[in-house]
Length: 71
Image (cartoon, rainbow, N blue to C red; front, side, top):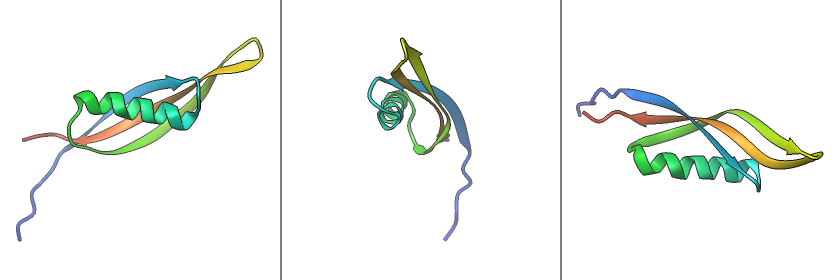
């Protein structure tokens, strides 16, 4: 059985949600999946919160989206 060489690329995506970090990851992934094919993984490289008047109003994540380049 012959294995094929593959080349991957990483693209950074920043997403936010008023609900939770988990929801922000889902929002970012769904948006990335609309334009990137062959996604094989995600890495959350940063998590932050936007605060207004002493309350968290948005959860933000920076995602590294890994995908295979098409030949």
